[in-house]
Amino acid sequence: MERPRVLQEFGAFIDYAGASIRPNRRFYDEEAGGTVTGVSDPCVNGVSAPCIDGALDGAIEVDYVPACSMLVRAEVFGRVGLLDESFFLYWDDMDFAVRVKRAGYKVYAVSNSRVRHNLGTSNKKNLLPTYYFWRNRIRFFLKYGGSDSLDALASDIYTAVFTCRHIGKPNTLGVLKRAVSDGFADVGGPFDAGVAPPDAGVAPLDAGVAPLKTAWGESIDFTPDMPNPILADMSDSCRRIEVGQAILDARAQDTKPANAPSPSPQIVYADAYGNVVHADRAIILKAQYYAEKAAFVSALKETGRVR
Figure (cartoon, rainbow, N blue to C red):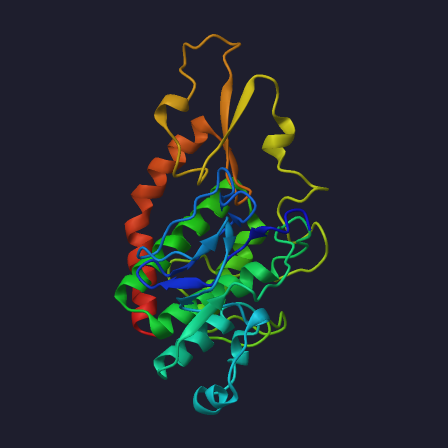
């Protein structure tokens, strides 16, 4: 473990309006008594975990805790059933916790219950996690959320599809399209490459979806062995800036003026999702993103309503 005293999360909350999860005390460093430098930890509804000299202490009520470290009374399973196996991977513990709370029970994160997890994506070899995350996120919020959840899902799906399509991530785009199609059709269980996509497609997505692959370097668009070509071609005349989203955070002042002297550096944006794009191209894509968004989101939301 590189940082055994840094918490991935201490329970989490479900943000229905944003169709997302907000981990409590995300990346909290118990040795430093605060969040890891450069990583935000938004407080949800003013709720925070108790601490003693920086270390987390006690318990706090949350919306769910990860199933890998969950203690449940037998009577609960008798009332609400087991975890829904149709989720297969990801979002099954959130679904279970919602059913538990709706049955009148409470869910607590307890500080002395800990699981060591080497968080990171360096060992990621295929895009199956991407498929299950998006498919099951859609299924979860169509099941439990309302119109605001559908709004947020449609917006996030559009952002992901647009980014993959224009930054050059064809494998991720193919998997994402299949995940969205299956999610809106409420397809569950383990992915089977031999099963065709649902007949009822998702209107704004291109026809056809790429099959999921498993070989190293084939299903991940950029890997340590096959780096992002923009980063590989970066010269001393380029300056890399870390941003939240490589397209949406583009700023006009970062583009290179036509009359700029040749030695002036060209700015390259890079984000945590592995997206890299030159600022000049990013500002053009940003305008295109907003010009095309309304039609895509409207069609996608209609698909969700008729499900």
